[in-house]
Length: 164
Length: 194
Image 1 (cartoon, helix red, strand yellow):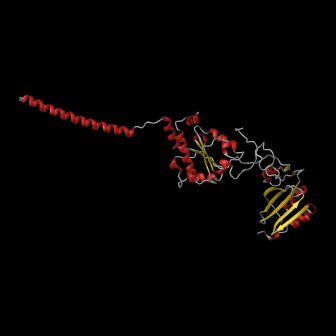
Image 2: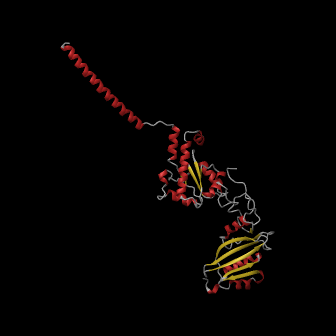
Image 3: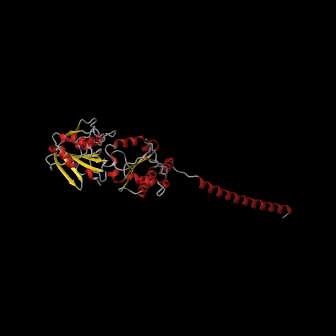
């Protein structure tokens, strides 16, 4: 349902950030680009502020753990939406296990604040520059990041509160 | 035999007849009184009466946790009408409730809250674990969910189902009423208020 003048976002991103684009994918105008994490903030600004792309709305941030399936373990996935053109765009950023951190975009979209906390909570990806990087779903004192593929499925942590 | 003797004999017969009539009347009166006493006086233990009153006026705390809560609300509605069993007055304050229906999965983070609300309820109090999740964790055998609410608070009745229908929950309430009545006046009931 996208308008015609918003179909070639991949080409525009490639023209602007040629070297940092690792991969791209387009299935029935469902466009995806994978970029290096160093250029994340520039790409985000470009997507948001370029006329003709205008991805003003950050819909979601999530992460994927490709434990032992890809050389770079994590991928942080951003979903954008253009209110002007009624089109969507997906941005993926690989994050390694050793330096498991990525720039925060909390100053570009305020909505990213809690998404980033959630990813930190469940996957353990650190967001540099985040103003308040605390756990959001699990409680303080919970050890580990439960959505990581190497978190033991049977592991139970002691209960909290007045009972203990 | 003279006239006087005859008169005395007649008089005594009259007196005997009167006595018999009075005896019949008094007997009749006794039967009536005995019946009225039988109809109006009941002997029992105080504990039994208290238990009977408690079982017919259960006040659940409003504590909906998940999808089971929808069925719990349906139970209080006119179609299933928990008012028939005196358990329809859901209270928003635990201070006014004596029944906690744990309707849904309890997360690790929610467990302290649940425990606190239970502690705030006045004695005597009862707990119904509604559905598979609050009974044993259900399908959520994972890091986030308490594997059965009986690890946090003592449970009186478990209602199975995923989710149990309103009629199943009403059956659970009836089972709880039976439990309250059978406990009434015993040491178990005393422990609840101790």
